[in-house]
Length: 130
Image (cartoon, rainbow, N blue to C red; front, side, top):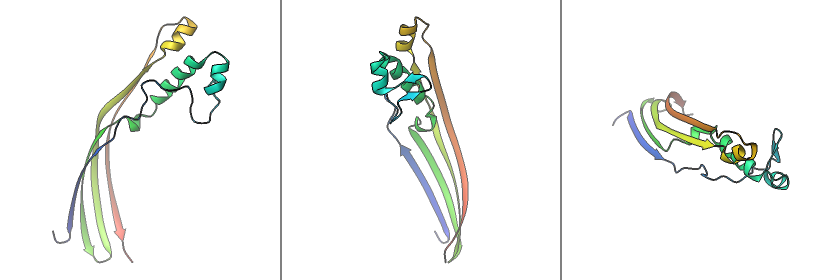
């Protein structure tokens, strides 16, 4: 309406985390001293490598949030200058993995790894057209 612009949005993303990950991380053949992929299979540590990949997934917190709401407002000062501001909220979500295979191989207790996040974002931009 006039020089004002209002914006609102909703974003949904499906879960990209594998519940039962494979034992590779892209082209890596190892993570520290733990072999991955075919190297892990050859060493008889395929299931341990699978646990390692699952635990690494818990570090991907920014992608676990499935629902995000956003709102913004813009004001056009003249033909060449506009100010935009926004706010967004990604609802709390979490990811949890255990090292059951590794614990069995090492005769150790099972450890649970959990990551949890929610995100507030705010921003502003002064836009120029020439």
